[in-house]
Figure 1 (tube, rainbow, N blue to C red):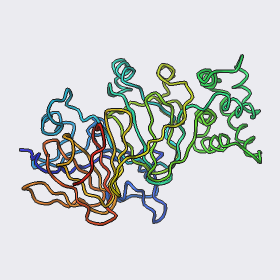
Figure 2: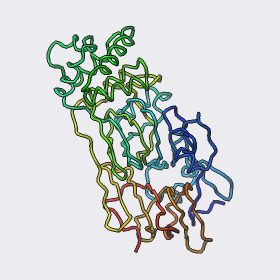
Figure 3: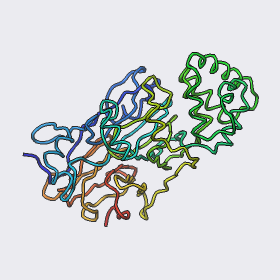
Figure 4: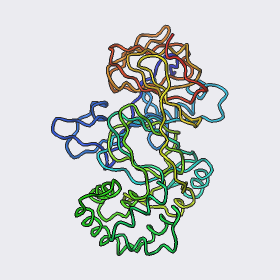
Length: 400
């Protein structure tokens, strides 16, 4: 029998994508520290997944053995997810993401497009769910996201002689959609020389623009990949620790460098546009992308108690909470499941009538919906817990 009257420990999968953090001498990647796994200088540590998505479900440690959380939720939806739900899927996913190089330039489809793409290409788009997401910086975190105003992009492109094959395709002042279409239709055979000439031109310029500098960096990371030219089209920004960014569906973006907490709907749908050897789906890209210029959507946290922050995106699937030195009392919280990770320090997990559990740094846990009373108690003042759950109508006080 499974025990849903207490916190359930999770074993969570790691993704070793090429852009992840590597060990540098005595400096160990954050995810390797959290999992306690040995590493070497060559292995990249990119993402730690806490969730039940079939692509990489966590394993729930139960008296009956380790069981994929996806299967546990499907078999016991009332106990894991709560009553009155229309689905047996956990609707949110929590990740720790660490990148030394840029991720692919990508977007994620909204619900309508995700359902259509999954039905047509299930091997490419593994679920019918949208993927709104937020990133909360742990360290200084660089990203590019969303289209700049077209005139600003055009001005930077027109400064560069090497980009003549791009702008020669414009009949009038192009829209953002036309800027993308004409960039992606430059003949592939000419791209290596174009990018080599552009890199030399930027290197010789004593006053390159910020778009030039980012493009040159991306060209070094991804030689002869035209995706580097998106540096001229998208906003770039730097998040300080604790700052957060909301990425709506259909928004082009690429994370560039840093450590962050990702919260998202439970989806693994990615439409790639560049900076990758993987498939670039031009049809899906132009069908789904939002080609309007938008400023990046910062997401300021709420929360009245010291050490408590709640990040609530404008989407119903999830919210992310961080608690430093602050307990969480489940009796004060709305019903439903939550996932949490001890990012720093250690915590005591107290469930009524059950032995107290110690949650060391790096441990991941499920508080199932059936656990209606319990407490996450920090054991040190710097204990930090990151928690994901379905979005509430208003933030709840973590403890009475």
